[in-house]
Image (cartoon, rainbow, N blue to C red):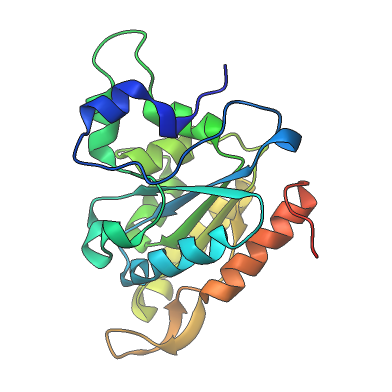
Length: 221
């Protein structure tokens, strides 16, 4: 049976402090259920936009959303402002106690039809490009089924963006078949002016709609 991460009894029992804020449908073919989007959020100041991004995604008919967060990303948003289920590193370790227990990063990988990493900070960009998987989010990405779309939205300071290694790492992700939603030039939170800001939420949502239409998960009205 296809796993449904919002209904993992071992996980929910192990984390009473976290309230599941979204229900998952029973396993069914894609044509009979909602299209599932897994949002990954990393420790860039652009994570401030997570509540707005999730809200805009939920406005798309037939879409179901869950979020995987890094620990540093939590600094920039309030979990109560995110109206879907949030997963973090603690959930991965609390869920697995013995052989045959579910493995969260694998269950999430199977559950999702599309993954969107927004924002993707410089640290996680480097990890993904190098194959490092030392937290829940990077484990999901490392295990990702590359027949499914994965979109990423870089976000970092201009000096970090312009470092030569950044172009190499972004190129590596594109070589994996992942889709870049390019960063934009603007005045950054730190006060610098230049490239490195995450794409606008509207741009990201439009790209998700475009990908969904190509995969039969969304019909333009």
